[in-house]
Image 1 (cartoon, one colour):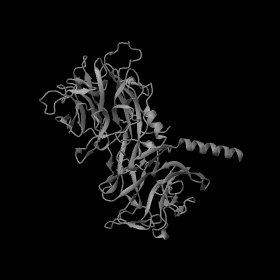
Image 2: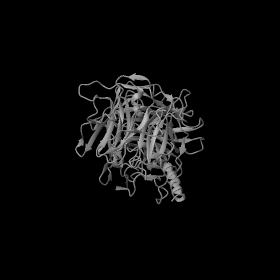
Image 3: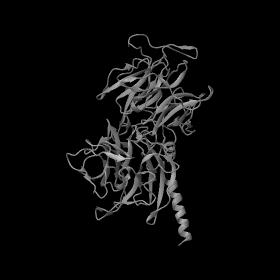
Length: 585
């Protein structure tokens, strides 16, 4: 089975651990403790998933406060009022992806001393029901003093339902230029929130509320309806280079009652928490009949289905230009490339349960430009590209390709061992492979065979990149041979090979690639040769495979890591091979 961002942590029901994690049908979140007789609102988790902040209203809906609860060995602790809440009408908490601050909606006055905010909606006045967005920063194990966000965000007294996306970008509901409530966003740049921008999310006639944005910006869940008489229903949309895809309804297994709203994502990025007045199966019909409860559901079916179409995929590679995730055995660890200042370094993250650790630079990747990691299938070694010189004291390698010289942008193949005590010292691979300063894109097979790309040595940097293979015999790399379908005339790049070398995926300028892009192709082993490469219908570079080689990871034109399910291609090839063997036993 393909393993893509496995489930994160046990969810708790009635004070005991659930029998199954992340239910695919909506389930009540911690009934009797968090979901109770009050009117619960959105849930915001610290990154470790062990602390949750949520709003709760009184039975008359006049008072709301933000409460906090911690995970315990038996479930969740009795909620208590958060230190920054309790005096005013506070609701809609939203946690930043790194847990450094929380944004919430409140009717408190800007100076903390005046009258509470009123608002007018639909021509009707609502005393004390106004909302502006406030931000409170994490300080050690506690919180600082809340600060009202600037007027670029709080353009009226009806601003609510925030969520925090990549780079601190704020998504929320507020007043558009026409005074109507709309889905907006404010980019956080140079320490300031920029002017609010409308977000196009589906058809113009949709009413959109309560956005929940993926930590890497790859998808959004929101409540939508197209007519006043319809209930709000949760839908998911995915980021594309052209904008948000058409929202997809999450279905009746999620949507229920008179509304489904208040979407927020759990710490794993794949569990959705939301607010609904739906009834609990098996409970009496009057369960919390006057209020909402918090519900949870796994988004895995929708995210995995979209991944099969080459969608952006969440992971520790959450920045634009993060690239080439190289997985250890069981996808329990990953090394990838990340831009640091004006160069690139290798970063490492490991998975504890379903959560990835905060990426850290590898100890040997602190001085030179290191890119394009490739993990051995057994996880015992890593091959990567570096512009570091062959000998200490030398200068960084220049790249020479496409008929140009690129100062400091060259590369050679380096290898480093990984043991139980950590990483060794990188060693430059033999000059038999590193024949010039423009050798890139390694891939390792289970028997040690190394695939990579370089220009032909006698082309003086003027030829196209070509794919090569070097067998490893008794620990020694042999003279590399070009792959037969890679002619050095049309550029081929970034090979990713199955551990048993049964197939290879790579990028190429060959048709149907356009003038400015590279298409992904797959070719299958055929004896000592290869089948004719076939286009996968994807535009991208930096191909990598999951440890079970069923999922392809690559960087799309939006510069983010995407995923694509290869099982259909592999199954079709296997079926064709079976027919061929039957005909020619």
